Image (cartoon, rainbow over all chains, first blue to last red; front, side):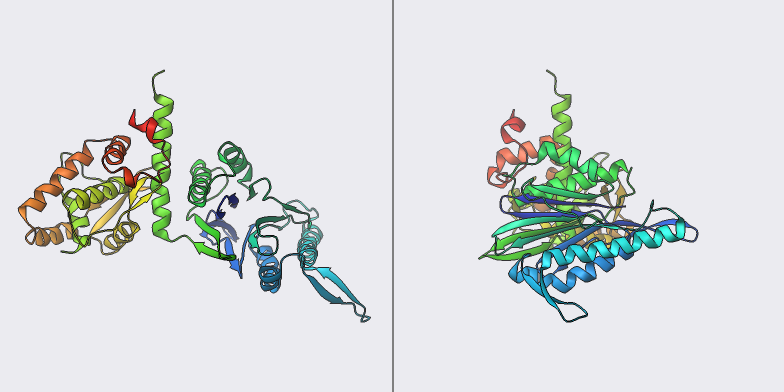
Length: 250
Length: 146
């Protein structure tokens, strides 16, 4: 089970996830600590779904990480058919095709074995990066069928089984004027509260990354454990303040 | 004098029934120790989202925990209190022989102050006395200062 959140801030981007995976042993489901966000060149890649499928999708995205980082998503790449015919396709569409193929294969394989598509292993992907060509932060969501959406205009994106919880919370707090410092806290709070409620099989440790830009170059930072502890204390103060306001006599 | 020893001593100093101490109380206590007892070569604090913060304190809390000088007690709400261990107590006894009575009294007074205030009262105290460390706070200071 997973919750991944990307939040665009006025001075950067925050990308965060919970840190628990549920895998299936012969004795039943087991909980494991699992890293869900990976750096691929200047991209941050996160995904909800089945670990094996996520790994395969990530391998494909890795092949184009450098190209996207340096030249952007719409860069054309050459494709050669078995007959030798050359065509061009954007790296963006190529990745969508590959993700579609991987998920389609898994669906068919699952259906062939179980007789239904229900419960088939798939990957739902969120990629965040700074687009040097467009000079803006992008939040790129690719669904298992290869469908895509860019969420930076909305300001945030969420994926995983806890995402409805995240959407319900974030809509009341998100503001485009939010800075990265507060964005980290907002991401932490959403994931922490989702874990505390415990309805989604989510767990710690919470993993938070930031992308900021200096001299037109993206700077990517993965928060250290002491930075996470400081966020936790800030989160406690925030909740304490809310309790005080709620309990205040009118 | 090592700052980590002061941290351990602060966790240890007995005040009333306060055996357990939260990370926020520790952070703000160490900040007051630095400011009010004028300790040099001590933790460096920066204005953070909940007032003065030194990330090094968190690292040292982890270190002291690994060394079994302090222990973590779950709060039941997803975070931990800290408590001195018997091993930590014997370390503190050694350390307390090396520091001045003035420092011992100063640390005791600050721990009493910390223990006597809620989290928000403590922040109000620090924010009003050291406003330069409140500039990045997520809390609306005007509302808090009422």
